[in-house]
Length: 223
Image (cartoon, rainbow, N blue to C red; front, top):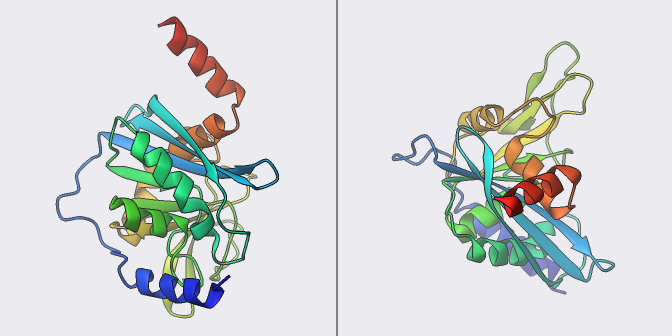
């Protein structure tokens, strides 16, 4: 396994990341959420992508792809393990989203290429990383403040935001083709009272076949 070569590829791809909003970016019609997990003792990678209409945030489409896992778990190289299934699910979509929220890191990564950034480059779509835990960077204690910048030295990486009282914070970072400030704004625009924004909450529900998704399926099937 040429891990040194993969890390070098990360550095090269990270140099291609665009950290500003597309000049023609407007209010999106479709926002997607993406979630990746593993089945059969890690031998199968499963990706779920949920397409939501904006601003209603109603689920209109979902796709699930399962592919053979091609790389073992190696800290810092997770995106190489996850992106093949994401790209397979992306290829199945009927609605092309204007923005994708990915359950994982954007540029808040030691080499500035988390799965949201890697996928954003490959799919050529604006992406935001919405992670449940910190991979790198520092931040001041939240305490009475629900929002703090996530930084590495003098370099801003994103935001640490407690989206719901008494819940662990989210780690939000731009993935590709979106600015640091817009990444936070769009995650906040996608909240509906839960810890997670609706796009990634639905992607997780679909991937794990949670009751909310089962109810949606029952209604959709009747319709």
